[in-house]
Image (tube, rainbow, N blue to C red; front, side, top):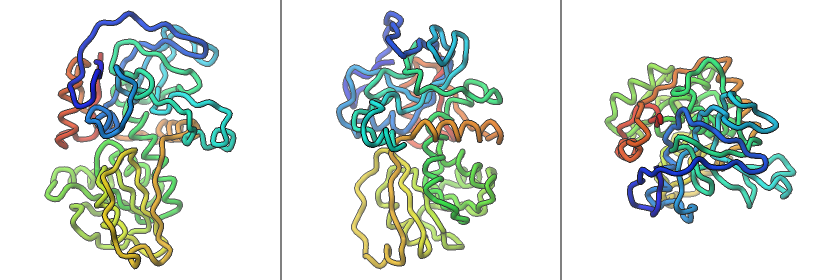
Length: 321
């Protein structure tokens, strides 16, 4: 499924199988989860993708033609970060997620909305055996970015999650496993989403227009809505942190300094590192997470994107060739 021009539907095309270059593996895609970042690319909110491009960066695949790290037949996962130069000041200091030359799967590189794909084997991960293809796919971004976002909350005990979608429904379970108290914020009036959050261990769930019963030590924002930043600040105690976990967000409105005062902080999360992937997938293998998925055939990728656009996906949409 190919994007030729932003703000237009993807097109179903037949292409020859890609040929792997040095350091690449050829993959047969078994499942690819749909991410809100894919939606931002298709809808033109993230500029300058490689066009035409095959979207998709939450890939579970079998290696068809291996390299040094992975042999043919092994199952691997492919995330958003697809390549870095390895030599810049960011790469040399453990911050490869900030590499200026980085290339991203499904944006700069063709991704997983396809039967076959290529990937740099340095940026592939073994997938925990305890998850089938369908339920493993959302771990590759919703899980990984959610995990990095949670890491920036430090040892916060009371965690607020704004936007209870693919990432939040996984990270809520991780936070509960770590002994934290989770407060879930959904779209106002989304009783089903709030019930889902409580099923997964949230001590409270309500609309984003509601005030939680306790002050938060940290708030993680997964919805791409800049207006939630001051809302989350109001709900966060002194010394607390508000972390924006998305790659794109609408403009943040102005707010009085007193909301930030008291050593509160606001920060963003950019991409992921291989260390994030290794740590989270190990944790996911040890802690069986409930991964809620909605299955779509590959050729129905546009329907999956539309369902996500309209907030009609519980958990994560996953494309299957």
